Length: 95
Length: 484
Image (cartoon, rainbow over all chains, first blue to last red; front, side, top):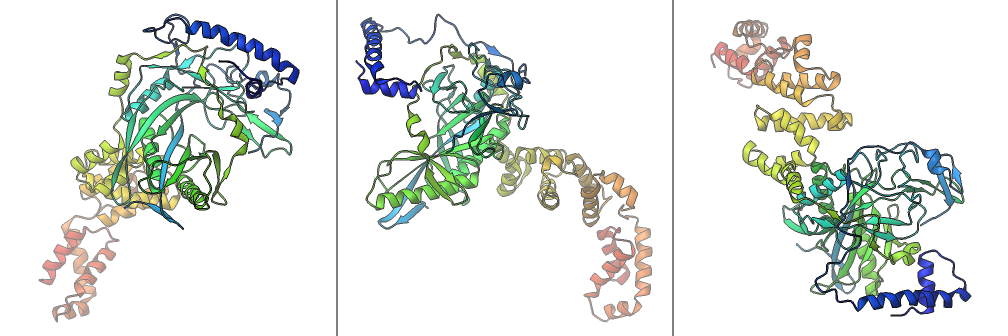
C-alpha cells in the first residue's frame, strides 16, 4: 500500500493540519516509509493470536460514581483564546 | 394495514430505523468526577478531562457501566463481557478533545428486541442492533453574539447510551411507538430520566422509501430530533421529500439532514459532509472493559418490574381491563402511586379513583403526579373512609375536592367540616319524618300514583341532612315510611 499526494492532503485536512504543497512529497515519503514497516509486520504469522489494542492483560479499572471534580470554571477557562463571561467564545459556527 | 405514501407512480413503503442517544442517569461523568446535574452555571461542572487538557487520563465510572448493562438486560439484549472504547475523530467547537470516546467495533450490548403496540392493538417486535456507551459533547449557543458562538462544557463527557434499532419500522406511528416504549423502559429501569425537553433523550431518524417488495434504497439521517411528535413528523416529511426526488427521476443521496420544526421540512446539513471519515481507532488510554459475569447476573436479578410485566399483573391479579392497566403503567410514577393506593384495598375501585377524579384534578391544576396535593396515602385513606361507611360516594367526592385544595388528610377534612355520613337510622328517620310533614301535598300526590316523586323525597331528605345521609339507608327508610 502506498499513499498518493491527494491522500496526504486529505488526511492532513481531516486532522486540520495545514500542509504546503512543497511539503507533500516529504510527508508522502515519510508516511509511506512507516506503512512499509507495517507491511513487514504483516508477514508475521498471527494465526491463533488474539488482536490486542494495549499492553499486557490490562483491563479497565472502574471508579465509583462520586462527584470529585468541577467547580473550577476560572481554571478551565484560563487558557481560552477568547471568552465571554463564563463561556468559551469561538468564531461563529452555524448549521 | 400497511402504511404507504401515495406518489405519482403509486404507493411507497417507508423504512425507518432510530438511533437514540439517552443520557445515562449518574452523579458524575463517564470518564471524570465532574457533576452531571442539569442547569448548573456554565462551565462549573467541568474537569480537565472534559475540557480536553493535555495529559489527563480518563477513568470509567462503574455506575455508568452498570446502567448500560441494566438497559441491555431490559431490552432482552446480549451483554458483551468484553467491550472496547474507540476514538471517533472530528473537529467541532464543543468537542475539546478533538475526538469522542465511543464504542465502535465492540459495543457493551449487542442484539436485543423491543415490542411495540399500536393504537389498533397490533404488536410488533422491533430489533435492537446494539447499545454502546459514549461521551456527550458540550453545548454551543449561537444566538448570543453576532460573530461568535458561546461554548458551555458542562455536558461535555456526560455518559450517553446510543441505542440503535434495526430498520424494522414502517410508519411514523411505529417510530413514535418505539420511542415511547423505549423511553418508558429507560424510565422504569432508572437508567435515563427520559426528559426530552432537557435533551436527555434525542433521536437520529434514518429514513428511506421503497416500492413494495424491493431491497432497501438509499437512506438519509435526520439528526437530533427532540420530541416523539417531531420524530413522527420528520419521518413523514423526509419520506415525502425522497418520493419526490425518486419520482423526478433523480437519486436520493445519503446525507445528514436537520428537521426544521417550524416549517415541518428537513434540510441538508452541509457543514458535516466532510466530517464523515471519523478514523476510529482503539483509545490507547483505555484498556478493554471486561465485565464479571456474576456482577452482570446480580444487576439482571435486581432489575425492577418492567411495564409489560406490570401491565399483565394488573390485568391478571387486579382484574383491571387491559386499557386501564395500560394507562396506569405508562409512567412509572403513576404506577407507583396507583399501587400505593391499591395496596390492601379494592384494586378496581382504586383504579377508578386514580384514573377518574385524581387524574381530572391533576389536569385541572396542571400539576405532575409527583407534586400532587393529594398523596397516595391520603387517597388510600379516603377509600378506607368509603369502605367503612364514614363517607358516601358523593361525600367522598366533596372531601376529595377539599383534599385537592388544601392537601390535608381526608380524616381532618371530615372532622373539620362535619362531613361524616349519617348512618344512624334514628336520625335519618327523624329527617324523613320532618321532610314528609313539610311536603304533605307531594305525599298525597305520590300516593295518588305519581311514583316519580320518590326521587324528590330522597333529594329533599339529603338536602335537609346537608348531603350527609347514607343514601341506601335514606332510601330504605323512605320506602318503609311511604309504604312502597
